[in-house]
Image (cartoon, rainbow, N blue to C red; front, side):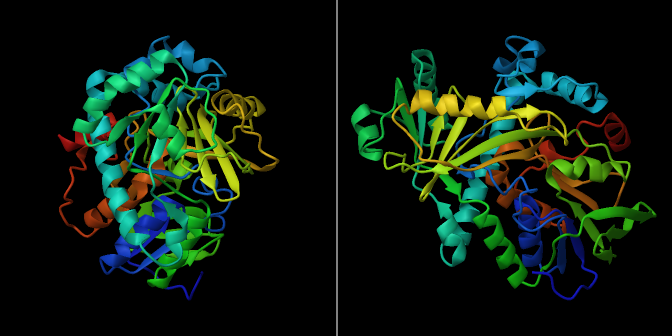
Length: 429
């Protein structure tokens, strides 16, 4: 994808789905754009390469909800917790946990849900338009999503939430057993009940990311794989040079969209981001004849099931273990147990791939989008967490508008970069 290098108007650091959508929308504003990625586009180092690819209006609830801390912070330290914190001495992690605990209120969770849902709706519209034809069409499926509940309490609570969800813009409805059998003939569930979201959709990854990279390159964006950033030069509150393994760039504006590595990258410029990498796991198997045809959320188990033609992917759990956290066979085994509990007759014929990826998470689950003070030409687009596939299209559009000096048609204040930094708040006063 790499072409002849010239200094661009905007350099995007990061070639995952967030960086590529930043580049896509920036190019549409008429800017010349370059993207640098430390590995191949859609490669195994990217968070976009092996996840379940869920998009649409499902999953807009922030991680920081009051119920998460029902058992106190100690609950997060249990290895089988859906959100697990691997104990370690890390000042940044302790600060993140303090901010996370502060965000676990009804008011903040409701506000965060509204922002995430708006981003998801905007992103879904963009994906429908972008994937209407051409190579991307085969990588996008929007036929709805099943939410399965195994416990009576979980199902009853979900049913009670339907009216409020519908009023808030999420098209949920209760599935009667006959309807579930019609949607998934031949699939045997061991559940109490299910809901259906007609706006459930998913992207087939890494194929979508690779095709998006080709589309972006076709618009004139310079794509530079294997170009890890090695340093920045600054002057007069601006980034004047970005040094990479493939040479130097002198852009007018720089966007840090490096996923879980964004915090490390920004730190070299003296910018502290409240960001923690959260490891997620997926297992891809050969799909048996009785595999689900629609994506399914195994709700209490926090596991997603994605059909990928002759393959089936299971994904779940979030583990705050740092950038260098080791693989956890215990977490993989937990995913398999959950799938077996909900789908007892499902017998995959073989494992194709196991994968772990790092989701960049903020304490309030809202992405960091905007200019990084005190710099005049440094921008940040990261922190999309475990729902980044469903937020990136709209997030890239907002960043492009901000860099173009336009007023976005959505309030970006809840996503401002310095909202967790008291020094930035003092300067703004």
